[in-house]
Amino acid sequence: MHHARIKRREYAAFTRSTLGQIPQLKSLPPDRMLEMDAVSAVLPFRVNSYITDELIRWERVPDDPIFQLFFPQPGMLDPADLERLVSMLRSGVASPRFDQAVRAIQRRLNPHPAGQMELNVPSLDGEPLPGMQHKYRDTVLFFPSPGQVCHAYCTYCFRWAQFVGLDDLKFASRQTASLVAYLKQHHEVSNVLFTGGDPMIMRTSVLRRYIEPLLDPELEHVSVIRIGTKAPATWPYRFVTDADADDLLRLFEQVRKAGRHLALMAHFSHPRELDTPVVQAALRRIQSAGAVVRCQAPLIRHVNDRADTWADLWRAEVRLGAVPYYMFVERDTGPKGYFEVPLVRCYEIFQKAYRRVSGLERTVRGPSMSATPGKVIVDGVSEVRGEKVINLRFVQARDPDWVRRPFFAAYDEEATWLDQLKPAFGEREFFFQRSLRAMKAAGRSAAYGHRVVPRRKHTIFGHVEWE
Ligand SMILES: *Cc1c(COP(=O)(O)O)cnc(C)c1O
Image (cartoon, rainbow, N blue to C red; front, side, top):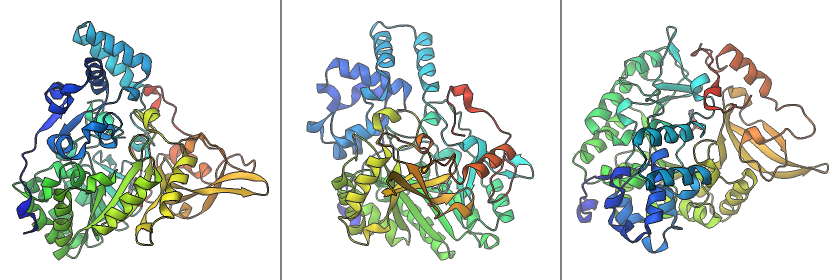
């Protein structure tokens, strides 16, 4: 086999309580360690030895993009909050007071962006199905409860709230029974996307219990099974040398033999994640089991906010037989302030990278915002009769009729999210806003017309949601 020369590695995570045991951190100044300790009390932190030994270039820390991607950074918290937590840690304050301060900060960080709880949870016979989301007609998201952690946490994660226990795994589901029942009633669904956390954290025997029921001939309309994962970047051994790696590939083959397509939606943030022999072996093995690897990542300041980085990333993906799929805009949650890039800047980086690559890399779409009404692409900047505008378009929408319709926002160099944009040409609102209001009032999305959980205002987190 290809992987004969790959040395096995046993998975072991470093978290906040073992931060001090990471050998490479020993040379860092004590103040910097205290800051990391403070930030990791608020936001999730978890890395592993593959990341610390093979991905990070320690001589370039703290600017190293992979270090920024996985290690808590002081700029992720408001300076006053950071200062307060650091001084509490320094003076050894009692833990209930510290924990209280931490919770207060977490609640100010908009833990649930984009109306996920409000509009996306489907229902079966009037009962909400909390482990699922059905936002776009063709695709159902499923959150298996044992898949709600990751091999490592990205500093910019938009699902951070569930990893710090703020969420109590509201989204997770224990079994597939309700998924299967829902799918039997919903023949418009052609894709099931397993997501998390990271479903690849599950042992193969557990993952199999979720996937096999979908191969039932009665669910023939489900032609695609997708798995959203960062494991190829954070723990490629999962596919190569872990004890149940071979069994995993057999499960992938089984999906194909059942006449379905398996798409591994791989999260790659930086070309360095594709450099090591073990990730390359992982991609070869996944592909030889008949799965297609499609790649996506958000555009993140300090990590991948340069056009060269993206051009290199897409080229490396194509070279390894993977397909560039989405470039996302960082979502409006958690430490967004530290990582955000204005929409116009995102577009410039995307365009500059896109023009440098061949048609095979141009399967990528972006920069895309996963916002309440749908996935909105920032498609360019134009001038129409003297007015500078931002061109926008849906690639996915709550109402499929909105897809591919161009619309325009007044030019705004600073806006970082859809809710900060104003319609161009003096219009009062964007074309979809009226129907979106109606959906919210009715507590349902248009596409599949099912009553969802009763509306709940999001003001408990002090955040006013768009619309
Ligand atoms: C992105 C996304 C999907 C999948 O959209 P595709 O464009 O088909 O990849 C499905 N559901 C939700 C909620 C999403 O955000």
